[in-house]
Length: 88
Image (cartoon, rainbow, N blue to C red; front, side, top):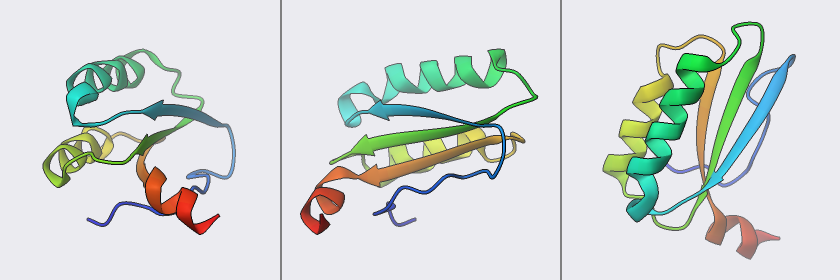
C-alpha cells in the first residue's frame, strides 16, 4: 500500500472527519482510540479517519487499515505530511 499524498472525503454524506497526527511511537495509543471510535460511534454517520504522518511504517499502516477494512461507514487514510507540504 502506498501512503496517500492528498486528502479527499471518503464519503459523500454524513461524513465526520477524525484527524490524528502520529508516528510509529504513538500508533499503539492511536489504535486504541480508533478502536473506541469503531465500537462507540453512531451507525448513522460515516467516519473518515485521517492520519497525518511522516514516518508510520508499512507494517503499522497495514494493521491500522485492517482495523476498518470490514467495518461499514468507516474509512482510514494515512497521509504523508512531508509529501503534502512539499507539493503545496
